[in-house]
Image (cartoon, one colour):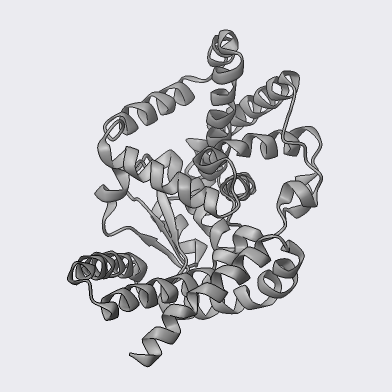
Length: 333
């Protein structure tokens, strides 16, 4: 009981320390990102990459069930049950921020490269036109087997801690294509999603493995990795995903202009867009989606992403900068 009380009370200094580090990204960059996190990731990858299913998803289930049990135990109104719950939260809090969560407070790419969050429509227009040209180049190569790679082989060749989800339906009804498990450093993707999305989803979760916690940054890293691939279908996935993000911005800011772009798209692109819309329409507007969006929005806002779930959309800023000013090109190997 004594040790559980100590662990429970340890939650207080942990919260204070995390809030201090939140305002000191230079400390995170120097001591956490540059040293500690890399060590944790390497150890986790060495242990868990040899297992062909995501241990982390099983761990999530255990954590959720144990949390429910501990909350239910509070109905007995015993002090020890309250301490047990606090101790449990303290351990999870420590593991989350130690193993990965402090990456949320590192210096952002926008600060590092002085990238403005706002852009003019003329820049958006120019970027879309450039991407359409690149997509047309890749489409001409996709039919050549020597220029493409089978998705299963692509996953194997990535040679990282990448797994297929063992509970895909749960995530699909939350409209989640993939997720990163901080406790085991596993990048997990949903095998049932449209093939055109799989490469960028995997690269997105790999970016989280690299320590890019910000969703827009992870999406941008995914884009750059995809378009640098040796295979046309992987590059197409990157450009296609970027195009979707930018066209969504057009719909929000200049809806009257959307037909100008869609009329220029190849039939394959239009078919892929329609397939994506039809696929996700099966899982939209359900109670699980609404609840998970609310929880995840709160989670992101609590971890330095002020826009919450809308932060995913901010990848457009990085993509436009990449094509217009190439500031972010400096980080691409």
